[in-house]
Image 1 (cartoon, helix red, strand yellow):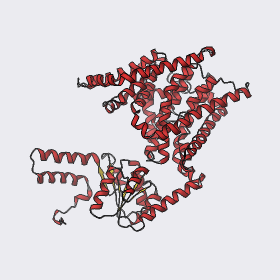
Image 2 (cartoon, one colour):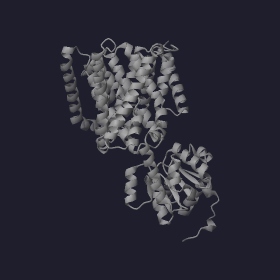
Image 3 (cartoon, rainbow, N blue to C red):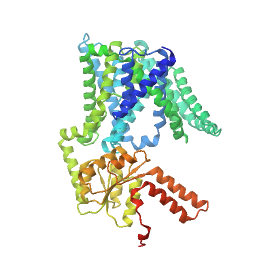
Image 4 (cartoon, helix red, strand yellow):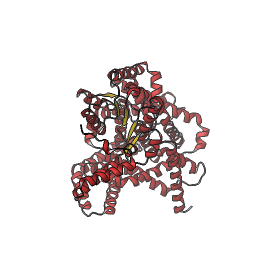
Length: 580
């Protein structure tokens, strides 16, 4: 098979895998892994995991670390320091320490049954300590859980896991040194890493800003993109030359750029390279999986799948509980982080390349990690139901929360329910107050809710996509429901619940654009307000007024445009206007 044919096969497999996952509402990464298994040498044998493809896939890891470095910033870490450097540190350290010590204990207890050096155990424990940022963040974002109490803890742990990859990338290659040279090798690797990072971060930020500004002034898009690629791959090559990893250099490049004003532009420019090459990396991971070994050693694979998942769930839930969280929050945090992660594949591959992980362990561990990621969406989607059954206190807390919400709204009727109290929800609430229209707002950001309540606002903590929350704020007594956030999946849920339990209450939905307008209207939305269209109409109003078009004509033109899009305004009778 020629290189072109091989590349076309990879692209076709990637497209089909991503389309399948999108239809099933699963993260694309799972599609890449599955098609890699199917087309690999151990299944349909349509493609071989060639050396050239593996080299190309390595750049996927490079750009993944670059993006992580790009998102790394001190203000973000400072705002989440309690969860990142508290719970996150404890999770990674305890996972690595307990797995390594447990392996050493088993090795001394039954050396014939459990033959594993502490170096191998350390490399494997580092891989197993990781959870999937891509899967968890995607599912939590769809479920509007990023700002919940368990969501903040999950994000904090994931952020520290991403940071913990950096020292592990330095540590794992050094573990391959002979026993008498191990300590000097580890010290040398740590010294080189510290010296390189210090050198780049002390003078690198100023130099990076100067260089990017110089290139940007040339006003050439292709030159800027090529420059970003040069910086990323150049620093990756520099760290590899120093005996460290390519990914470490890419991480440093991302950190340097994150402190400049070009951060957001770089994110947009690098995203296509990042997504495509990372997809290729996951396909090559899937191709490594030998289903025949899994079939022959299914009991061992099942053991490697169940034990780490249960162990991580129990450990994270216990650590979260000890940090002061409630039982329900602790259980949810543990369930959300129990699976393996994409960086686990990176560390597992690195351990295999450095002969730390034996071949007879590599495939079963890889299979168990893939299985844990495949079941992760199922675990997360059912987490709330399971926690309610396991934890009586969580059920009681949720019931008390609903009761408190109901107490605040019990005397209100003909009010407007505002789903989401962000900037848009707050502006709507201010306008309703000026007209003395009662309202109740639901939001999942506890800090925002507390600030609003301290100012006397009618805002309560609750998920608008759950029936209990909507009923607690008086859905059946409301005059309207307004969805102010840009989450169409949640908006569809609000529409379905309102249509089923209070069909007489109209629902107004805010969206980013008009792509899902008909879908939302078919689901029962009385009106859909696309943000981009409203923005363009306001821009047109100001532009036409500035060039001298009479204001009455401008207003009439804008009104005509609105009448074409919004059903509620089509029958508007100007003669009925009354000035109060």
